[in-house]
Amino acid sequence: MSNPENFIDEVTEEVRRDRLFAAFRKYGWIGLVAVVAMVGGSAYNEWSKSRVSQRAQQFGDGVLTALDSASAAERRAGVSAVAASGGQLALQQLILASDPVEDKPGTLAALEAVAADATLPASYRDLATLRGVIVAGGDLPLDDRRTRLEGIAAAGRPYRALALEQLAYLLVEDGKPADAIAALTSLVQDQTATPSLRGRVSQMITALGGTPPEPVVQAQPDLPAGG
Image (cartoon, rainbow, N blue to C red; front, side, top):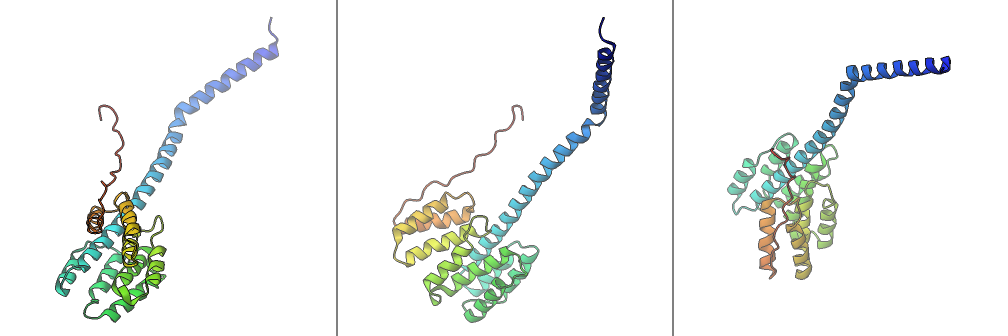
């Protein structure tokens, strides 16, 4: 015959196991919901950051393209047509209020003020720095322009690709076309570059005597079977 104490222990263990299973069936969904919420929240946060960066990139690319127009009227119309929201509206109005052809010193002063304003988001300060380098051109020493561009060309910065484009153009100005072609080739294959930027860069590679590579297209995740 079994030891009575062992028998009691076995019964107690069975009761505990039954209670645990019952509690899991009753409250287990809470843990599942918590896990789903954490995973979903993390995914949404990453998606939100990507959207913000993409909007900033599109805004900057659109503004720079508009400012390349021939006449002041076309530039103002182009900048006005660029979709903007939040702080971008203030920066858009600042750019509209100045024209580098009609008032270059005023334009540079306005852009310097934006770039130095620590209360503004980094994306707007970076755009002002980028535009300031382009407007200043040869009036600003090449090394100074390179230093300013390198500061906004770091990984994760919203105008990284546009800054890399301008850095490549500085290589051309510095008499290093081969280095410029290599830098522009890398930019064509950069997944953060917009289609319009890739188009400009490819044309520049051709103008320098190089052969533009095929842009790298980010692979899409496989859909589940039957999806």
